[in-house]
Structures are given as structure tokens and as C-alpha cells.
Image (tube, rainbow, N blue to C red):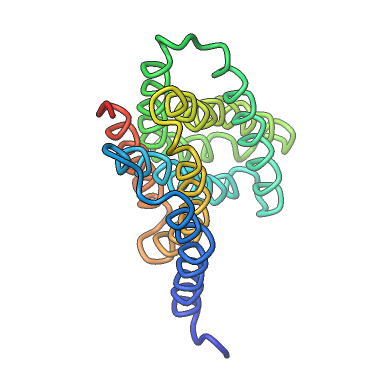
Length: 222
């Protein structure tokens, strides 16, 4: 009753989130360090795209795996567990990448995420049709086997970017963390808005495009 229908409530939430992000993340960053020097925009766009892209893909995958697992609670627990486990493993593995190969490995992970998101549009509905008769435990195992490797790729982008930033532009590191957190908040709301208006397939495509933007920012040397 306070916000009206679901869409207006979502838009109100989006406006509140954007305002709070600007007030408590972007403004303090600007006041504390001033605007960094040349090339800062590409780095900030990179970390912002990672934050928004992760939430776009996560929300879309949560909905897709509801169909496979048969209940939103199962999808929430299995999807979040698998993605978080995978991102932790991906972050850990990134530590072993040598400095001279780090940009190439991180860029490859970003492009693999784009291809994976596009492939999921066709593969997951097919998997749901095939796996519906399977026991729940087998469907959960199948979901974990799909989502953990995807999480590994997702987990490599942020630490890889931070390591590159630390060697090239360490003064922008606080801005990178701030932009990533800020756009994670905004991306979660944007994901629901896109899904409500155009469907979860478009949400997956939006996530793929966002990671493609991150790859383009990383490709351009700062």
C-alpha cells in the first residue's frame, strides 16, 4: 500500500539503493581521495561491471534452478552454496597465477563467463526436461556439478583485477572495492527489474553483456 504495485515498489527500492550507494560509498571515496589520474574510468567500470554482472547472473540462475530442483528453497540453498564455494575456489586458484600471465588468465575467465551465460540459455531448459524424472538427490548433484565450475570462473575476475590494479594503479584500489560493492547492490535490484519486464533469459544476456564490458575494460591497458 505504501509503494503501490510491485513494479513501482521495485523502482522505489532501486532509487533508494542508488541514493544510499552514492551517499555512503561514492561520495566518501570522492572526498577521501579526489579523482584519480588518467585511466581511472576503465578500472572503475571494470569493478562496477563485475559487481552488477555477478548479481544479474546469480538472480537468473536462482530462477532457472528452481525448475530443476522443484522448490525455491532448494534452488536458493543449492545455487548459493555452489556459487559461493566455486567463487572461493576461483579466488584461491588465482593466487597461483604468475604475474606475467595474470591479465591473460583473468581475461580468459571473463570471456568464458560470457560464453557460459549464453550457453545456459539453451542448456538449462534442456537439462530440466531431461532431469525432471531423476531423484532429488541426483538433481542436486547435477546442479552442484554445473554451478561450482561456473563459480570458479566468476571467482577469478575480482582478485585477478585487484592484483593487476595493485601493480599498476594501487591508489585506485579503494575505488575499485567501492564500485564493486556499490554496483552489487544496484545490480541485484536491476536484475529483478529486468526479469519482471523481459524475463530471466534477458537477465542472463544482460549479465553476459556486463561481463563482456568488464573484459573490454581489462583489454584496454591503463
